[in-house]
Length: 82
Image (cartoon, rainbow, N blue to C red; front, side, top):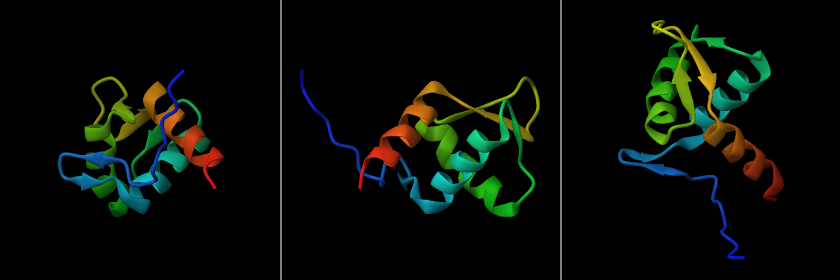
């Protein structure tokens, strides 16, 4: 089995997701089923999180996101690095 390493700097087409995106992912996970974007920094971070496939919109709302399986896996792997 091939072992891959994961850097906290996951890259999207526009660059690394960064600490704001990681903080958003943690808030989304802590919220349960859906997280409502209420902070301006959330709106900035959600663009990168969507591009990386870590979150998805809930239904037709542009205010609510949910963590995807890929996002949950990324957070789990970040927790193991260190």
